Image (cartoon, rainbow, N blue to C red; front, side, top):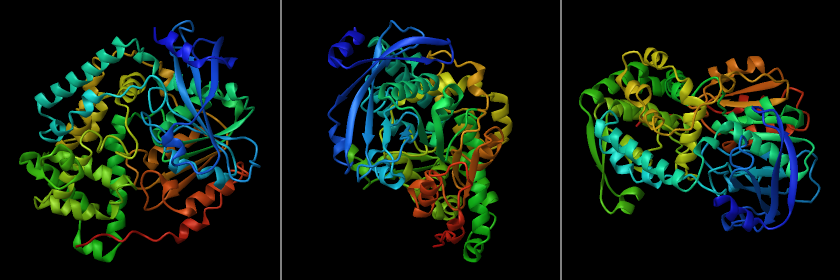
Length: 509
């Protein structure tokens, strides 16, 4: 059995811990932690003292005598060897992805604290992993036709079914890969490492796990910071519509306030609406060549751009600092209005399954099975189809991309049960929290954060203009605010440097 193989690999260093599961009361459950050499991809990019180990926990805590899984724990020390107390747990960049070791490691020096990076269950170096190469291989098929094409949807469903059957055939309990179990994983890390109290940081949708930790294990959390978070009361499918509309409204307003941009691209809202309708009526086909994806495939990649594809692309462009294309969004919309969709087609060919559905594509591998389990257990059961339809109105692009999202089909066969209604409720807490939200972030929009902080009395919301997803990855100003605040987290942060951030220079040619 898988559990027996993992137990044999661990050897010694057995630790025992007790914690509250939040669903079945307090129960005694064994965990083990063993220090091991760090993986090469960690040591290659972390330039300060770093150690690693594997934490073994029950796969499903409702079955404590069942199989176990292993989670990689990476510990990064600040230079100088005299860290401040209360280390920082970092939960990753987004659900279904591993931590960005190179991006996070410098934070140890910036906050002068030990950083503890946890590979989410089902991802990265944790064992088992829930990658779905069956789905990844659909890339060209996914962009070579419209999302509304029944054959494309059937192919995605077949690929997801094949991944599901392979993983369950390996003895993996897919129902155990959810936000509640991940929050309990974090608590077991704290107990195994003997940490009395810590700080918690999360980036993107990993905030859903951080907030579940607050719901279940608040006593040991000193302070938290969130970078462009999501909140449990709003699912990711709904954010596809509300987040995209809000982020685009912000960049449209900034363009309107810029003399040259407003002259070149007037009335962007109507231009986008008309472009979506035109492309939906007459999709444009582009054969994308001389790109990394085309070279890897050995042939040009056929991309069909309709209204849904355009919306997916502009959502990615406005949000992602990795793409760095927010200032080019107005121009891309007007070119699409004229039938020129080369930029959109290029982005879709490079990120066929991810673009518009995940905020960061390509930088870190996506473990689709882990993401499917979380979506199908914790979010999709609460999606209100009638509300989505009402939000989309008569917009065919939003309907095809999000109301009738192909990912909703996956949950029909991804039988992982569903979370209780508690998982959907707002989290209430007075723990000090610093919450960054970029105005251009279409995956964790500002209105959702403003609503959520009503029950987070210790929170400070930093409204960041001209930025999308991953605020802390952009400018020193935002990192300096965090670095100073964490020393005294009950006081309001000094955000004065934000006033000096220049507005974007829009691409008008």
